[in-house]
Length: 382
View 1 (cartoon, one colour):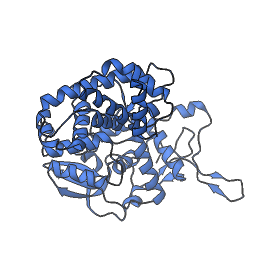
View 2: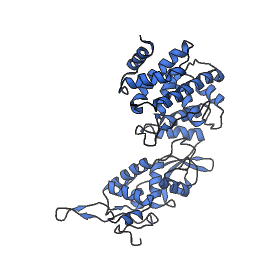
View 3: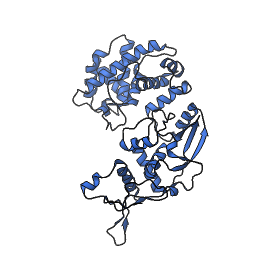
């Protein structure tokens, strides 16, 4: 490994190319007590030196610092007790699309095979860093990487974030022991769900899996086919609504940005799960209802939701975490359905509904029944 000139004390700007060697990310510092060593990264003091770091280098430095190690261990150390068929990481399908994060985008360029079994669930930078920290702290990997062989393609079913971390640290040419099983596409998608039961799957991932499973994994199936085979109760109806409006952008697009997390750092207004519970409470549906008939209700519900969000965002005192929480949206959905059942339009009332919700204060954790009662009183005076 060539010596660094960027002030990181042994940090190689081309790290990750030699799996047999540790990835050096900094020098240990002497602690206050004599002889004590604090395994921390030596950060550059000069701003100029800090600017020389690439996003990839910064990510690995962060993993090392949070793992309390001066170097990342050799790849051979991490995989020494793992059995399986050795494969180059670049020959395994990891990414479902093109990531926007520069670190992940670089990895995706080196791992060009598209992953189709994980549906909308993409490798996440935050998760990659977390997994990397756990691996480095343990100084080994315990859980096998599971690969589905679908025709001539090899797709990762379990362990994408582990593989992404290893690719980041040791290069996409690195060979990793993996467990390979021949599967159909739908069997592989089922395996993904089983493998991920230890974590909470996102609403979009759940909906996509449920709907495509109903049509034997046929991602090209029409909405009419998916609706006919997949919608058998109100629980599956909610998943269909999520799949239809978010994956297919039909029958009417949402006019606002959907938040990916409670933090709403990306600027989203409403969580997808909260949209889902609104549809579940608001839409008129009965078993066997034709798609064309249901779509009329669905379009009206989407237009109402778009209008409500537009009004909410213009109101002072609006807090999306509270005023568009799942419990609040269930109450709004029930009020909407009551109006529909009585053949009355709700769209002209969006301004009054938004104001009534905001006037209630922090109702995010309040029971939906109480919020519904308060909304009824505000809207009808009863």
